[in-house]
Amino acid sequence: RKNLVMKIKKNAFTILELLVVLAVIGVFSVVAYPKISNWIADRNVKKEVYEVISFIKEKKLMVINDKFGMIQLSLKPNLEVYTMSKTNFINTYRSITNNSSLKRNNQCTYGTMQSGFTRNTNMETLKLSVSNNDSNVHVYPNAAHNPPFTVLCLTKDNSISYNRLRKTERDAETGKTVDIFIFCSKSNSTQYSCQYNANLDHMYKITISKNINMKVYKKNKTKNSWIKIDG
Image (cartoon, rainbow, N blue to C red; front, side, top):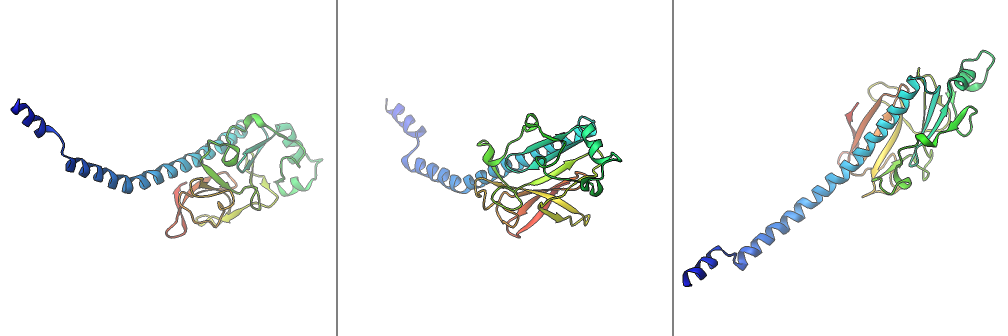
């Protein structure tokens, strides 16, 4: 029996050893948890960035495959889709009897304001920000800012541009004007603080050229600058 007690004592943890283990776990939690939390927040934002890119590419492919003459995308927390049939597109932009300013300037205006467009809610399969509690992002532009959205007019030949106010910038590599769409994490931003000049962790930006070439940038908060990561 004495040998059994000695064996149990030998194999058991002392209080001091348990305290050391708990201290190590505590230190690990303090150091590692913020890093893990930041990694998860960043991953969630990046995921929604690429979901939007896939959404735009999908709609562009529908135009290339002649399902529609034009598709207009309103990029904002509630992504809206307006479609124009091939017939309406030809009548608006290719008919010799039509001499509208939209035709002359190769422009589109907002879907609710232009004849020939129909809102297609069945194609609005992606919701962001305030439109979706499961979304992890705020986006810019949004209703708290001006302009309140970014608008893309997708055609087979990339000939049509949006004619109203939108947020753009100059592409450093091509020198051409591109539309922008910015993503911020809900973990450290609001609909109001997520904006073009913000300097936050987990910020991403998509730039979109007239021919729908897209580039992805991530904000370097330390340098307050955008770093291209894709495109």
